[in-house]
Amino acid sequence: MKKKLLAAILASTMVLGLTACGGQAAAPAAAPAAEAAPAEEAPAEEAKEEEAPAEEAPAEEATEEAAEPAAASGELINVGFAQVGHESDWRTASTKSCQDVFSEANGYNLSFVDCDNDSAAQLEAVRSFIEQDVDYIIIDPIVSTGWDTVLTECEDAGIPVIVIDRTIDDSDKYVSWVGSDFLTEGKAAGEWLKAYAAKQGISEINYLIIQGTTGSSAQIGRTDGFREIAKAEGWNELDAQTGDFTEAGGQEVMESFCKSYAGKFNVVICENDNEAFGAMTAMDNAGVKYGPGNDVILISYDACTAGLKEVQAGKITADFECNPLAAPTVEKVIQTLQSGGTPEAQILVPDNWYALKDQIVDFSVDGNKQSMTEVTDAVIEAQY
Ligand code: GYE
Image 1 (cartoon, rainbow, N blue to C red):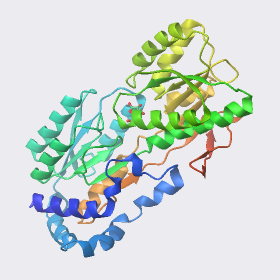
Image 2 (tube, rainbow, N blue to C red):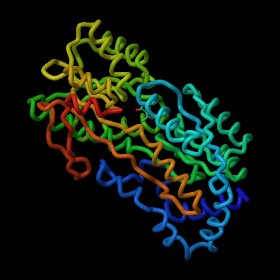
Image 3 (cartoon, protein in one colour):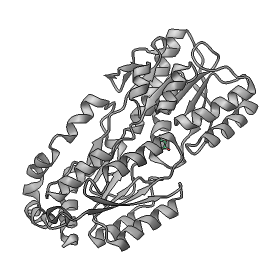
């Protein structure tokens, strides 16, 4: 029964959203809040109508089949979640959001595995969910490749997979992806820097990147997006090394950068806030002054509460958000499947860009005008 249902779901999702599989390349450029939100408004019906003629009536079949599991009888829905790890404030917020949403009170039985940034452990976690015969598997893929075999195993077991946050690039055997557009985040950081440097009269940019986990789509998208602007502007990349999205990693890389490139850099890009905190410690120790009005512009991503506090303190010059609260949207995907509908193949979570008033400048990404949010007490208070 399960297998039949999954076949129907996958067939219809693929007709609908082939380009979406593999993630951010297909994501609309510059998709902050307003544009991303409508995706959640009843995508299922629309989807069903569109794909129906191409298929042998999978939608109806799915409806019948889907009514059977859990929901109707008041049974809990079994969900397995293979989480990346616990490397950052962002990750903590993501985990909490999933645990809050997929609670018993909400009708779920959640098997949660913290994979500690270990790809082999993550594959093992997914296989253990197959063995448990859960109803749905959620994966936040540590890296974007190496997935097709295990996703085929999920398909064979008839268990729908939903990908959250980071993307999978080498398999389309999942129902939906819910997350942020990392390429746009990287481009936004680059376009902001271009506009800000022009305003400050800075003509030469020598930058260093502390990258996220190598091979994760968050690292790839942010690096590629920023580099695209850097290349067009003729900026000089001195070095790029991974800090693995951790504070310790950020500090270690920045310590070595401070030795190798003393006095030579005027921009440091950290691919998440925790790396930025580590880089700040390293620069403090090396006597490097950073933040608005100082020699070095410090750019960060995530915009978690602690990150925005460092923006307010005049340490991080601009912070590009990645919203970790995707679990409620994943739940909507599961509910759509439960009621026999076809969820959107790709659902973007909206992001905002943050700075203090004097660092807010006008810029566009791929021709779309962006708006920045000024960091205030209220903004920090409301952040994750
Ligand atoms: O930026 C970082 C986390 O995948 C978008 O992973 C996520 C990234 C986030 O560790 O803080």
